[in-house]
Image (cartoon, rainbow, N blue to C red; front, side, top):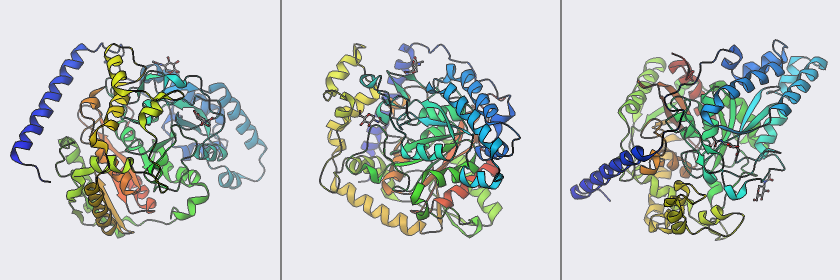
Length: 528
Ligand SMILES: *[C@@H]1O[C@H](CO)[C@@H](O)[C@H](O)[C@H]1NC(C)=O
Ligand SMILES: CC(=O)N[C@H]1CO[C@H](CO)[C@@H](O)[C@@H]1O
């Protein structure tokens, strides 16, 4: 399956043509009106505290929940006109709930420890991705035909976070039906990156990434089937964890998962401060928390470390950008210098087929032979399935309700590219075995999050397969934490994925704390 010389030339020519097409597309696209503007810096010190610290201060009555919730409401009102991240708020309900929290703390006689134990996030604001049910909030996932659909219950991890005392302030934008890396749809509009409004925040949990990066939220919740937590966290400079699948419930998300997708999708925490990842995951895991070793103290010096600099030259993805190669090398150097460990560079030829592996497995039927629900069917909900070619034609005339990305996915679904292939299944099985052997229960792997930093709006349409860097980890079913690593010369977030063996989530969460300490974690996009 190696590439010949002629094929390489063809790939190069194709990529050059695509680059030219995008340049023309940009010239023809209208400017957004916020182009060139910058987010204001944060001025309220409450916005610079982790949820863990906020909860502690609230319990100790050093600050009230109403003050904290109000600080976040003010920040959302300041930045959301620029970001379009929060698409429906519940500010007045949240303030009432905060007032109740303050009253409860006033009356609590059991002391701080009782509250910490029972309600670890008491009084802390929470942001929720719209595709998760949150009672009274939209249940549309960016589909015009679902306008007016309202959630009647809370999705289980949302309910658990609420039960731990967190107060949701609203829901945030996603890509249409959560199946694209740009959070844009014709119901709630386009969401922008807090570090550069002309760029994407990623997707599908892009509203979460954007509002977290923009300091309008401190903790949030996302789901990830191909990078939907990790891409937005990477592009927006925050932390996110794709949990080992099967731990956190995926119930009551729209669209629901079908076929074998439940094996590859994971719900997990997204946040600005690494120390919030672990307590959030403990809460969100519910009864399955005991399958993980979240109380085990991790000694990084005793782990085995590996790094993979790129996917080995896939035909589908673009090469990893120099800044990202460099920062991953710096992580390696720091690990070796700080911990006295050896970080071994490894290569897996199968990674080149990350995209093919992802599409093949996403299309497989479930145990009972039932195939996943076709995307064109979901696009037509609650009516009949759409016909992607017809939608494409309508799109050119500006008459389709659907985004180009969703139509593209509908078309891809009809093409031979997305038919499960036996040779790809073999490749994946081999990769799975090798990767599990390598990582064991004490191995940690660094892998680029994406080939480049946050792209300009719509550019992913011209480079649709770069998500293979995150997608392949879903199919392997491994836990992975996205960690920010400071900003590049243009002020855009850098980062890396940290992967571990199944159920070894505590290892990558410990790495997130280390990398935050070493590389500075989240940066205020409004600073300097
Ligand atoms: C969201 O809508 C879908 C159907 O369109 C429905 O099955 C689901 O129950 C709704 N979710 C909630 C929480 O109301
Ligand atoms: C800029 C933009 O399109 N904002 C929209 C975000 O979503 C809400 C809810 O659907 C709309 O009311 C806004 O117009």
